[in-house]
Length: 128
Image (cartoon, rainbow, N blue to C red; front, side, top):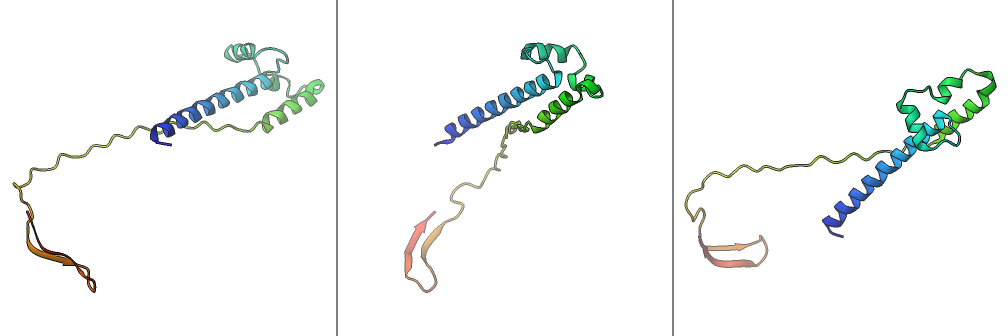
């Protein structure tokens, strides 16, 4: 495809990567909060309002040690999704060239051209 298709596919890829990272983050928070059947909105509310996370709360509780350990292992198994960072916009600035002498700058009169050991390609060339 052309460059426009490339840009469109890159924007789509970045959007999908951000969505996957956010979904994984919410899943991680959900597992850590230990809300069982509670929805993701409830988990976000709990995290915003500073409630102690399930793992942190019950880490040293003998009755829930197995449950906490299984949650910790599940969190460790979650693959990290890398967020693709946006490339910075590049702006090229070319200096204005200085004024040049009036044409012709370079002229040729009766010039022959050819490669060594080969035939002459141009004979009696005049321009400029």
